Image (cartoon, rainbow, N blue to C red; front, top):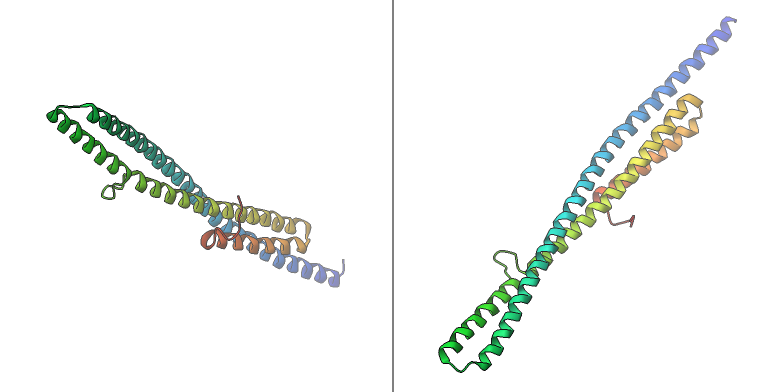
Length: 196
């Protein structure tokens, strides 16, 4: 091997080494973005599960209150029938007091703003929890797609080092941008794209 050939070989090796450093940097950046999107995705997934459980619990409480209210309303209606058949004034007064108590209880079961446990308030809380669940689910889907883009980008960038095909690194770079866009959508505009 001549000195000239040795110099060309050394220059080529140095150029390849510089390219590999750039690819290694791309892989490191992709790994960083992957870690961020995975963390955000797990957080969104946990939030979605938590809000789903909260909504289910609130709807169960709503149903229990509705059943109690129906029982009390039925008792009040039965009391009205008893009141019509009663001739004793003292007995009528007692039945009327019970009807009034049941009616107040039924109204309280429907709306209880001071405790937030009337059926109207429970339904509102449950709908709010469902909205938060849907928001977290939408975020989760975006973060999952971002993670997939980053993972594929890492594979392609790694393949660039092995094959020397620089085009793979460019595709990896494009996937990085796609992953960043999906992460941004997940953070700030989760309902911009419908991904369910």
